[in-house]
Length: 340
Image (cartoon, rainbow, N blue to C red; front, side, top):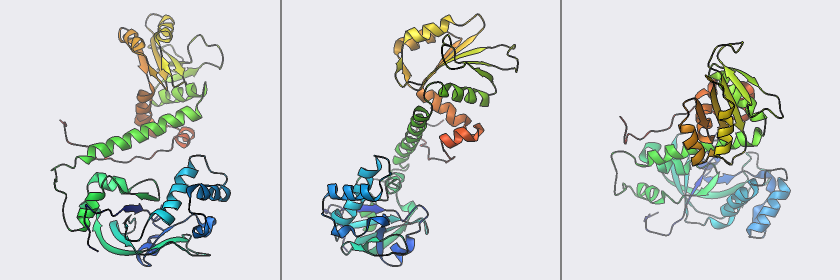
């Protein structure tokens, strides 16, 4: 196949299962395939998304609402939008190489498929490359969380590589590294904040903050639910609470902006020598921050600050909170631009 990066060829990406269990179907049998095995023959359905979604909802009725548009798009595009002559990219988990092939036939359904991937399209594999041939951004795009997806942002890079060419500009440092790392970090922050918001409504967040302070070496007392005079947690360094400093903590589980009146109220609860901390899943108004900036014994912790502390002390969390916010330690690339 002669490949022109300026041609109208469409590039797709596909994964072979979380553990690469479809690798044999892909590479040895020359098929790309999807699971969704309970849906039966998709080729007999009316070729429109509404029909596909209705069938998906009947087949898998207990999924979260966001699952259906995502899954519908994948199976419908696999059956009807991917055409013969399109290219498909498969990053294999087994041999750690990026395989590029051409779709050479229509949708096929394998009835009673023992391998669990009954929805298939024949493919002619053209070339495969080590992952190091591609920029980090290109690898990130084909590492999509979806099983089947269209490759758009780095399509030219894959086409040029397939044609035996290199991108016109090859900077000494892969400029996509910074964007990839920032995207991963932002997604992680969003995930942590979303789980805290969903799982720890109201007073439950106070117990979480107290646990976080405990990982920092503080002893804490959490006020019971109900009127607390604006103080949810009292933290100190010794078991009896006699050794200063004493930290009075107010916790807000709402994701709205906290204004100056709440900050001023906390300041009024502090005795000489005491410290105050206001924690929120949301953020603070500029007036609130201005008030706090003039108080050396006051600290404001917004949602982003809280996530940073969670990530810093996560390994010391107990199993309850690790289960609520499941994370694992990974390394992400760091740009050298601006580094000391």
